[in-house]
Image 1: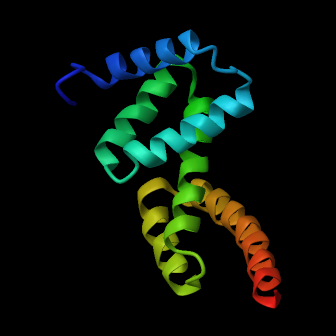
Image 2: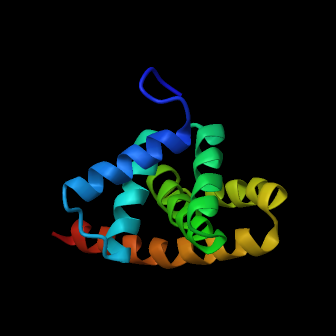
Length: 129
């Protein structure tokens, strides 16, 4: 992990304690957005650490919370890394389907399509300015 913490669980517990001490607003939506940002910034590039964290979320909260977090991080990664390269996105989804299955991949594909449309509209508006 690092010199400060012996395990991912210890790091997460410390992070939650700091958030409580700072009176972080624990509105579920804000917590989710903050957590997605933290995961993307600190560990998403490291698949092993990310998987370990998602398992910990499942253990501490539930499978639904872990799936929602993973899904939101996946959408964020696709949009930040692949957009607007449709061919590269299609290749990514083929690889992902082999790893996670059709249902999870279809859900991610649909979420990315929705976000893709929004970004494309925004890009066209900015391009007109």
